[in-house]
Length: 243
Image (cartoon, rainbow, N blue to C red; front, side, top):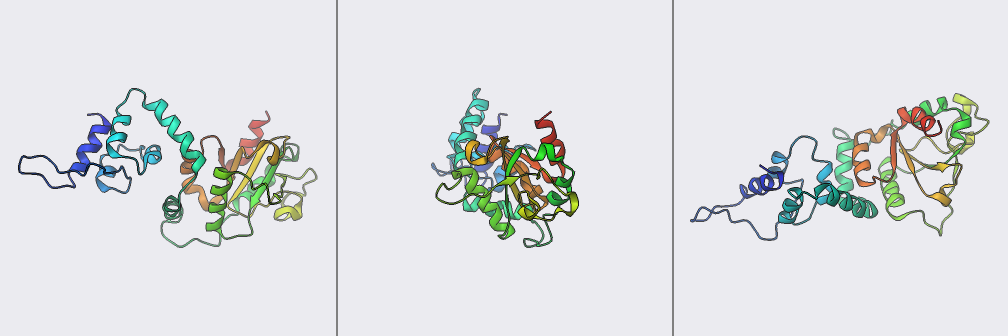
């Protein structure tokens, strides 16, 4: 059975059946990944992919899923939703996914500081960067969402620094621009193209620090034009970009 039809049949189970044996489904019901019947019917690995259809009419989503043009339609949806960014409701879901058992912790975001000390200065100095720090861990996700969906606010000064300073002192360089490089103690570091300022070429890469490792796939789904990399894999990632 095709996935679209399977989802429709699954949702019908939530509604009463008429005397004639037909399920009485509201005509304007929307597709939602919060619906337990939808979740039950989805194959493993499809959850992140279908987030772009959240809130759309269920019958429309069903037709799209069963269409031969589904890959192209999905690609167009991703481009549209990537410009909008995460809604407030979606952000709340991400917080729960990132921190499933406890409140937002304070003892996080050490990986970028530790691992970026191993990135050669001749490579790291070629990347303009801006670390999202100095605000709460939860606010850093909101700030990233705004930057990637709306762009840099041209009316405010956007401070950047090299990802690694040319004369980096290694592990003793300290956090943030005090060491000559972009802040590393926040949840995210946004990075531009090699040898170009972020204000010239825009944000092309995002280093995700350890606080938000659990949602990196969600970030990639929402913003497919951006390269997301875990902080503990950043050295290999940026080295390969210049190899």
